[in-house]
Image 1 (cartoon, rainbow, N blue to C red):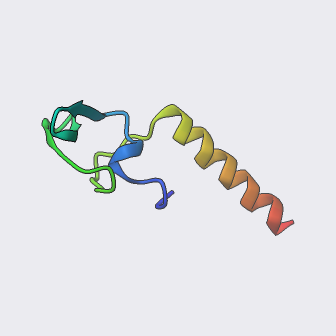
Image 2 (image 1 turned 90 degrees about the horizontal axis):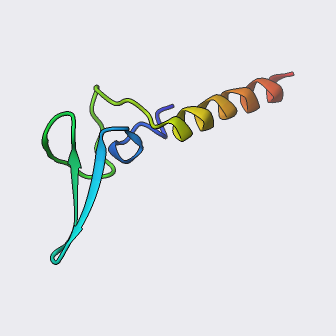
Length: 64
């Protein structure tokens, strides 16, 4: 899960493009962030949850 635990994979992450480029925000915390930052309040997006579960399953099969 640690490989996925970054702001860009969180449900609260918001990317906004303006005339000066991209700006990234955490809607939950209410301040600017970066895609690769990590916070303890992280809640993964649905597709990330599915990928984490799939990778967990792939690891189990390799152990057999």
